[in-house]
Image 1 (spheres, rainbow, N blue to C red):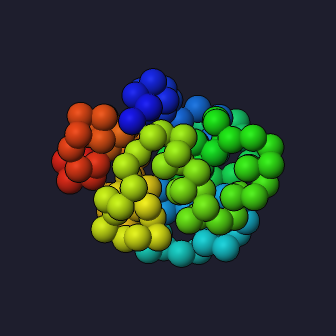
Image 2 (cartoon, helix red, strand yellow):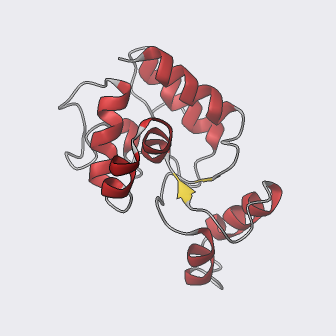
Image 3 (spheres, one colour):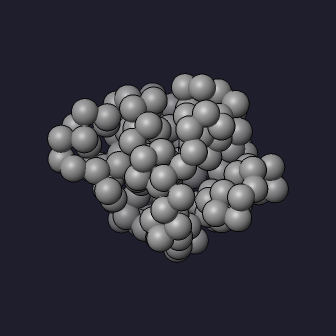
Length: 149
């Protein structure tokens, strides 16, 4: 495992994932498109959180929603890799596996490549702080999401 990169990501998450709207259930989607597509969905508190986070961070109408694997791609990917994997969740997760040096073949869902990247295992409306704890769990050799609720 690349502990330095994992630590860097955990600290970024503990700082509130500055400069992006963080969401484990979405990735690579334009913030405004997400808000328009989910407008009026009273069952979805995520829409309100995305809007609030966008406004608090002063992101305006430009930018995308970012998950853990997206952070790896943005932080450590080349321009070619970013273009190649941008809208490909599985490709982004594969890239993140390499960037963080995570073991292959450990995921409950083979398409996610590692449980850390699986949005179905993350808590609903996962906060950056919960994601940071999941990263720290992985660094300690534990299961990422079991103790983050």
